[in-house]
Image (cartoon, rainbow, N blue to C red; front, side, top):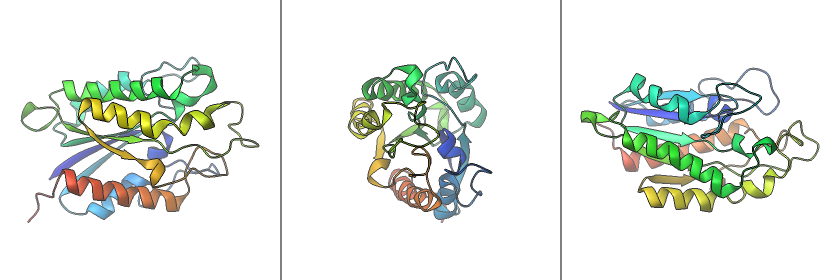
Length: 214
């Protein structure tokens, strides 16, 4: 059995662009991933609304992804693979960060995984770093002021995250080449995009970790 941790924010949690309850277990992308991979893979969902890569949020508490990750690795060990999909919340205007710095925050999370012994045989788990997709136009949405100036920054995620993955020798996938953010709120994804991402990540995982099931 391959054990895989999906570490992300509200889009991994399954937040819907129109608010209300999160998407169903089989609609949000980690659930699609689980259903697509089938027997031989155990998918652990760890999505939290507002989670950042490494930054302390002065308004929302307990959102620093770097602080929570080490205990999480210990809790779910042994892990064959950790999927990291964070950085969108780092775009909030109050942090004042650029795409380069945000990608470096994601790189710190990769480093935490690579320094751990939370993989099989007390070795580090493999890591798949996902670059978040660009934001949709923010004008007129709930997030217009909160994410002021973020659209252009988000379009640079793919190149910066790829560089981080290359430097660290970890696996990489640019979600911006697969899905788009919803025009409803510019941040979250519609159900069909979750389906696309779940299927694409499943294909990538089959390359990285073939099933151990006969």
